[in-house]
Length: 169
Image (tube, rainbow, N blue to C red; front, side, top):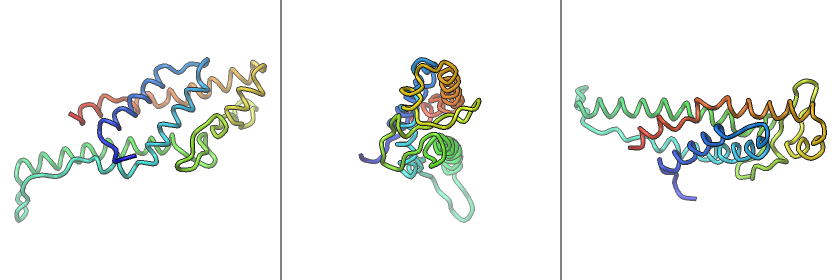
């Protein structure tokens, strides 16, 4: 895996956006795993993401800044704010030993290490447990599938690739 490029970052964000658009209560077990696979990789590469900030160009001489320098600094500041916000959300949607995605850096995300539950008296279990051992329990399936779908949909505005597309060009 080489250094992350702006286009690769855009590709990852667009994949997250597609997952968010396509998730429903029927496909949520597979989609949540894919969602966490992408956010985990981005979380692992957060230092590379910050290196994508545009360089500051132009002249800074004795407190006087050229127009190009001011424009360059403003552009970098806007990109930094956007990337910082994106990374904050990736970390929120990323790994947590007590959260939904209980993987370690570099570990594959599977249905065995993604956890949901703790709603309506339903305990916290892996997606695999809900999918296989609770498959005939309509109450559990309805609430867990809705919980997963709502969780992913909550990132709809955040993982919107529109702002990133303008930054790349």
